[in-house]
Length: 129
Image (cartoon, rainbow, N blue to C red; front, side, top):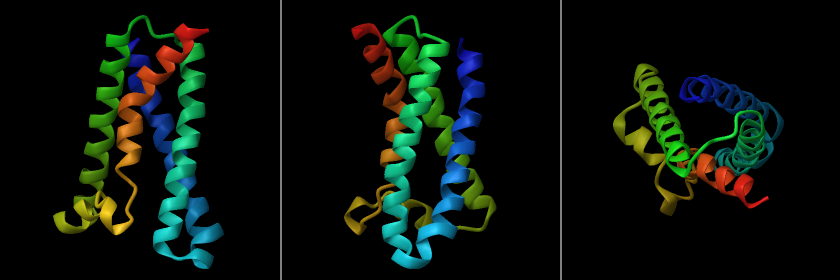
């Protein structure tokens, strides 16, 4: 099961790339950088929610601990990707860490947090039915 969810992370990455492309071409020129970032973060959280629900239906999780392991794995993969690609792309640590500054209007932190707790939320949701 862990391998399936490991591979499913790449589907999340594709959703994020598509979401970013739509942001950059559809509404960022009209609303500006920060509002576009905020809008696309909310959209990505909703897209991930739908994806998590789909995955929970296709590959039901067996336990809360399994959900937390998957969330933790996804969280680490997401952070490794973000920081790895950012540094590879030449961004400074200051620039990379700025995206986590909620007090500056940055809301990116909610993506890795959602990736962390999402599997557990949908495990609980599925158990409640």
